[in-house]
Length: 114
Length: 115
Figure 1 (tube, chains in turn green, cyan):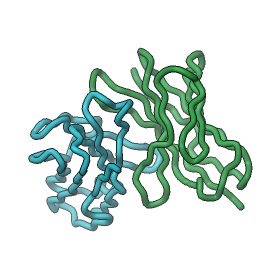
Figure 2: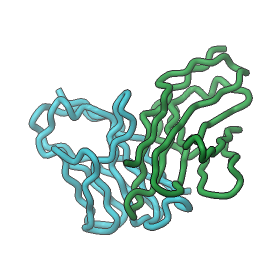
Figure 3: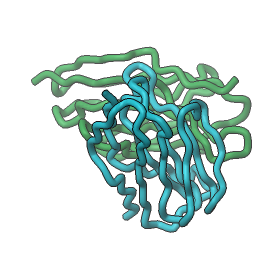
């Protein structure tokens, strides 16, 4: 079955520290992979996406993610976190069964301390 | 830039009421989606529509229905609201058959409280 797992419900980091948010997926073929961010009171915004090519993809706001097929992972990273990065982050995979539907992970809430 | 607008930011309704959540997009997208967001459960798909008058059940359609009479508008209907439908509801849209090149665009959400 297709699924997405984000093992960390809540992560706290200090401003300026590096960040890695984990995402593991189960999918029968090569998936489309996405990371979205939800700032407080907002809808979700696309950070980056991956389907093929270079396994390290760059996104907006200084984020990057690395696709590792052998580990079925697509972890999100940022070298130096800013206080404005405090938000909830969702990993998503798809499409499902010849539709345009995606499966979303349960999200990781990031808290940033000054 | 794509804009997905949800008509209400906050709604408070009573148990048993019929509730309409409205969503409008301005980019001529074929696909529109309604998700429910709950802490620890992430986003769960309620219904989606891939064209006018076309709809498909998602993972949690029970207690909900939808209406898509015009391409730009997708309504979520709670026929008889219950307290377990208290949640954040998110609408999204994208082009059909293009989920990679046309990623989902989300509205800002409607926080519904049923008392």
